[in-house]
Image (cartoon, rainbow over all chains, first blue to last red):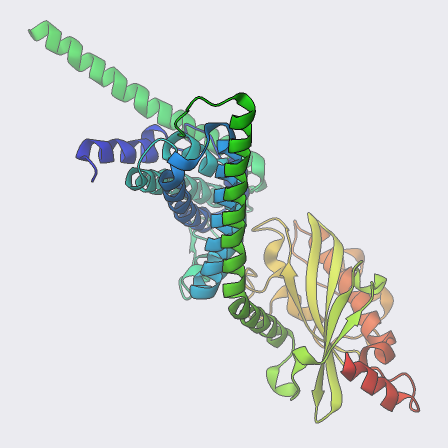
Length: 226
Length: 232
């Protein structure tokens, strides 16, 4: 099974410390293309979670059979084959969901975060840990892309959750700014994604710097009182 | 990783190559299996998807034949903007031609090609236009999709319905900004301009190529052409 501390470190790394979009800055291409609104960002992340869990568990199970010299082609082979199988199975068994998520699955194959986690984690760890790593790396991507998408559509068109009716028919996007808001095209175009992602990275660094400063102050205070 | 026994370099290389080869075979097998296993279901749902799109441009009650089975293959057609062969479906009611459903491409959208599905009645009137695929700017140029159009009562794309190449003179097949007949939304004129141009050409195609579409070359050769069309 899995130790509590190990689980904790996998979750922390995936969601915050090694966040795929904010720290590793991997998978920028789908990030730019898809984060035009929160719904798309979240949907791509859900599909990525599925693919990362599947490819991590496959590579972790086969890791003793893969010669070190040719591991990269083998990883790519495994990922590409499994993504295709997931894509086909999705289409057949969950057709309604596929219509929403389906367009994102081919995008995932090009996402280097999948290969990166296989290489950095699944090739060295048992299947259970690797599956969890895939899932939580995806969760980290999910909140980042969701937030980035929400900001882009808010600045770009004054809405939040545009396109929600394609996932849950009947729900309406929230119009936050007045309907005659002229829109900020920059936020919707790729440069807007870069600018806002930069702001998010700066925010994360600020949060961490503040936490580190507080910790330092605490240790200093403790040393003084001792 | 693999335990290393005393192996010479060439033997190692061969061994690695064999392992890589086995992986390729196994995963190709997995892929082939998954493909064969899902193929029938995928084909069924692709046909269903196609019918769903067709139903959006052509009212389902207006014909009684199996439209997808009554198809002809069009050669590359400059009027439709397609540089490859494409399918055209014919709707009939009690054997008499009602309408044709075909694809057209607007090559000059704001960012790339816009694919359209168009239904035209036998007399050349446009019955409906839908955008099948586009890469226009989200939130700006994507009102060409009725789903994203804020005007739900009368989506932008519906203004083509009922028009034909005869009923609207050639100079009027433009957006209002260019002195034509069609509305557009400020801030995104390249997109509607491209679509209006493509639909105008498609309307001309529907009006001029009736013989090709329905296989009625002339009154005398009609029977022969009909058979030829059906054998396809």
